[in-house]
Length: 272
Image (cartoon, rainbow, N blue to C red):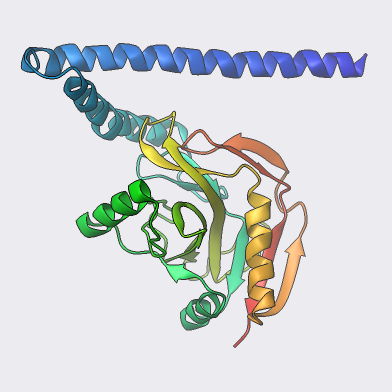
């Protein structure tokens, strides 16, 4: 009986999720049509049909939807630490899934020795380089990453490792220096908190319809990869793993990618 009830509940939840996505898609189509009629229709009578579509996508993805998300997330998302980073548009992004102890030079040295690269700042040159590398599948080991926010700021340090010399797939870690006197839930101290995820490909994000990296669902594997990588290179003095630091859960990030975690949190003390 309980198994049947569980299947019914699961079916109901899946039906609700599908319904939400259908409604979102319908709303997006309506929004796109309104943008097209208001801003583009009179300008494109003699254009190639692909040009108005491209312009419509750029306006919707990079101007209209981000502004809507910024307004709405200020209303319904809390402005305090909940173990999730946020995008520049205010959407919930990747979970915080590791803690480091050490000075900044220790962190930089540990990841340099372990074969990681610091990500470039986002600017016209880096955008051009990542576009070139992505289209031609050329290596770009210091490619920039999308912005995420915690404590009201961008990451203090960002590290990454390309896979098969292809910038579409990479290990990467964003790190934030914690504010003075700040403690994690449960009163735990932390010098740095980080969000570690694996970029598996590039695609369109369904919440913003922007072009971005898509991450692998099991973020625990990336967390454990970083721990093992640092240990293999002699950069870990001690480590404490607190199981059930949060509930195990499944969710989605700002790009619509599925995320799953067992809720464990490693507290990593770096070597001198």
